[in-house]
Amino acid sequence: MHKILVVEDESVIRAALRRLLERNGYEISEAGSVQEAEKQHTLSDFDLVISDLRLPGAPGTDLIQKAGDVPVLIMTSYASLRSAVDSMRMGAVDYIAKPFDHSDMVSAVQRIIADHPTGRNEERSTPAAPATGSTGIIGNCPAIRTLFEHIERMAPTDSTVLVLGETGTGKELVARSVHENSLRADKTMISVNCAAIPDTLIESELFGYEKGAFTGAHASRMGLIEAADGGTLFLDEIGELPMEAQARLLRFIQEGEIRRIGSVQSRKVNVRLICATHRNLHNLAGEGLFRQDLFYRINVLRLSLPPLRERGKDILHLAERMLQIQTERLGKPPMRLSPRAIQAITTYQWPGNVRELEHAIERAVILSSDDEIDNEALGIDLELVNINRIRGQRGLSSAATTNAHTNNDPLEDLSLEDYFQRFVLEHQDSMSETELAQKLGVSRKCLWERRQRFGIPRNKNNLSARGKVAAVDGK
Image (cartoon, rainbow, N blue to C red; front, side, top):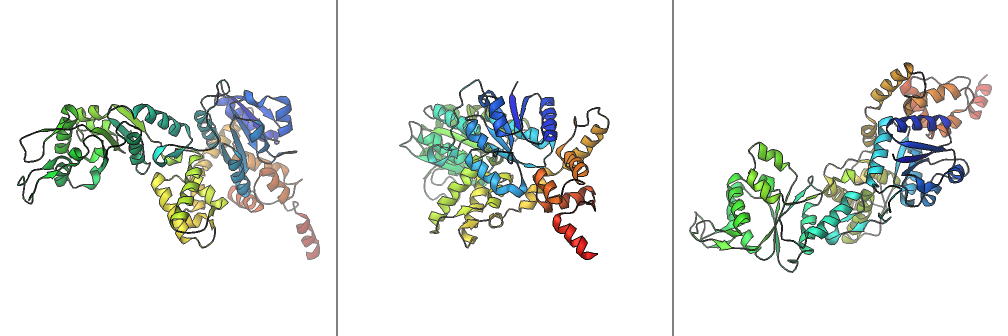
């Protein structure tokens, strides 16, 4: 069972987190401060530390260094965004904004523990800095490090490789990395985008043709497969290859020979084949849209590329590296990402993956007039991103509230949204708005907005010092 230490000075939040995580199969220990965590627990005994940013005595970020290789998840508020960004730079594995929903916390915990599978009983090997593979592949998340290991093992062979990944994840970079780490590194690698060549031309492009083979064939021409003889052929988006060309390609793979269009003689070729696709070839084969025998022939060694949204802190490392490259290329002085830009980059889903990030950085460098890039220059609506992240929370919170009414333990199903309402109602008579906001880890504006959303009117007796003076002056 995975062990988690929750460091939070608010006992109600600690209790809620304990019950939430214990219901999801984790063993939980608690502490109210950094000092208490050090005094009462051995930090290396845990698989994860979840700490509030603002704690009495010392900030939660102090645990990042004290915990060593144990990942630390920082809880903060949108009002403390710069501190959250600083936490990431100091080595926090991630941050989560308060108030958050049960599902957000559980998802974050599951992802972090999955990304650090060695746990407390094995040696952790993930370095703090991002690793860089050949041909510029940058990454430090487990999926990318596994990719580096598989490339190292597969590259020296001549076996066919199938690279799988969404559009824009960098499949051609992976193919080039395989080639440059192979015994054919000093030979040619030819890349072909099967989706970019018309169906009527794909066979002649791949296999070549003899003079007079068809109208317009005024001279013999070598095909791309033949041109790659001795080296590597990379067929990108092979799922778009027409059925007729698939049959010809199958013979090339099986027999190691090709025949130009219009020729009666076959030619032996020695080519290492690497294919890539964003489509599910197994399903396409089942639907009769891709040859099943060809699928089995190319599905020998597989390399899977994770989408950018699943690469954790790699996203920020990639963005900063791209920013450096683009400023140098465009002849601009060094630039940096603002805290809001960093939040946008690390929370946006990036449907276009690395390619979309690269284009966003390039656009921002061109459009920014100073040395700091904001989220608007990246073309990311931060408010929309935040709304998308917490969409569905109201429904989940309503369900939690319903459960709370039928449960003997009032904290058993108390979500953080429910806790917010309960805390405000119980403490607004004894605290000012500023004190309430500080305790909840939000800004006063956020507190006011949530009052409006949940229909909690501000208590007339709960006035700040300025408000009391104003009320007296108004009499």
